[in-house]
Image (spheres, helix red, strand yellow):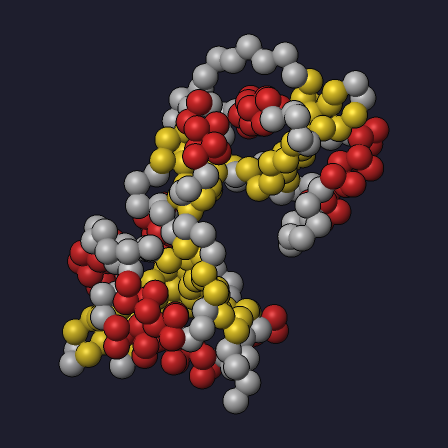
Length: 269
C-alpha cells in the first residue's frame, strides 16, 4: 500500500534506522536530512510511504515535473525490494513516458538490481568533499572574476556538452560566479561555481594543457571570495588527482556521500 503524507512525525524511528544502515542509507539524506523534510513543503515535491500489513516498509521523496516529463528521486529509504518495485510502478503509472533520475548508494544492491532490470544508465561513482579548514597558499597565478574583456575567450573555451554551458551560466548571474585564469592576456582556465547558497559548489573547472597549476589558484580564489559561506565539491572516487587537489586546499570527504547517478526513460506503452 502506498500513501502520500504531509508529516514525517510518525516515521522518525524508521528514518533513523535506515539512514544509519551503510547498505541502504540515502546519499542525499546523509548529506542533508532537510532534503527529505523540506520535500513536504516544496513545489512539485511529494513524499510517500509504503506499508505491508500495516508496517512501514519505505519512505520516498520525489520531484515530479509533469510538463517536462521529468522525475527525480530526492530521497529513498527502504531495505525491501517489493517496496521499491511498488513505489516505482506507482510513479511510472502516474507519470508515463517520463525520464527518471536517481542518485543512489553504491551499496544498495536492491535498488541497483531493479534499475539494471529497467536498462538504466549508470555513471561513475562519486563522493562529496566539504571544506573544513582554510589553507594559506602563496600562489602567484593571475585569477579574477570574469569581466566583459574576457567573456568571448571564456565562452570559446567552455564545455558545450552540458546543460550549464557558458551562455547559460552567464544568464544565471544570481546563481553562479565565474572565475578566469589569465596568462599574458589569454584565458587559460575557468571555474564556474555557485554563489547564492550557504554551501556553494564548483560546477566546472577547466585549464588548458600546460596550465594545470592554475587549478589550485582558481579554487583558492573561489574559497576566498566565498567567505564566510561553506563549500562542497563532488568528484569521481577514482579521480585521485582531483581528490588530492581539494584535500590540499582543506577539503575532507563527507561520510556516506558516495553515490552513483543513474537514469532511465520510461518506454511508451
